[in-house]
Length: 371
Image 1: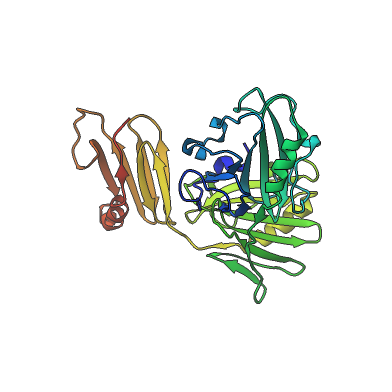
Image 2: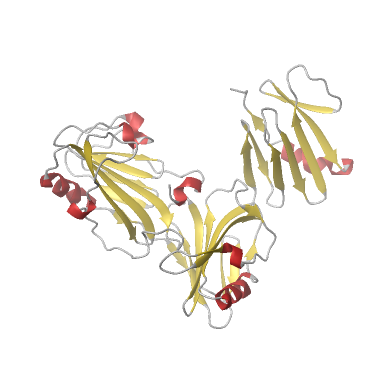
């Protein structure tokens, strides 16, 4: 799947109930769709669905569970978030209204969906968002009237515009992230209308050089944890059409970022790194999840995991190391033991004088029983 594979938890604005009846407008993940008479809709992870027959509640997070009766249609729209240069298929912006034609018909089936149905599919960059539109046209044979039926509703699709932040006194900043625009650089920041996958996007350019920094809506310590300034090298360069680009996914200050920059030459990387040298990030608390447990960590802390059924977790903060070791049933241990949900964790804090800081983090521990 596309970047949605690691867009952490999605914030949804869902219609009340399993299906929204005719005359309603669906809104989810920064996109809206108006339902015609006799149409029903659902808002779920990553996008929404509409059909000219009632949709079951279980389809909210699994569109492939819907069975389309002959002569009916099922429309699915997934939003992969603000456009970034590293994804093929979205380089050319589209204009509203979107429409599906014969050229969009898929030969064969659509992975995970009923094999006897006919499908149409379209990738579109609309209003700065990357959308995938799929129409299940029901059992074969195909009838052109089904596309017209889908397009009548698809024509109402709208992308909610982001809030745009412009530079002030040569500095571009919002929500704790900022850069100094060096001579010859221009740029802006976008704050999505619904922060379903991205908190913000910073876009800066200098001639034909473009730098895009996207901050994910949630941080789980994904990507390499890097101290600022971050530096792009030739190892980060991917040669894909239409232009080669450098890409780096990293975390800093408890926040996760996806960085891309055009890389036509070593000079491009040099100029991009000069800009990135001015990047500032205000630390923000983040959530560590693993092994049926959750910890809320300050932005200045990082976590390392030795994965196994009974894990060992190392938490490092300024001047403190906390080792959290889960004990096996019947295993004896001395020292401080935390008990939660039938599980036991041995706690070691170094130095001992940092216990107050460690306790503030350990108080956020929430564990569930082993399944």
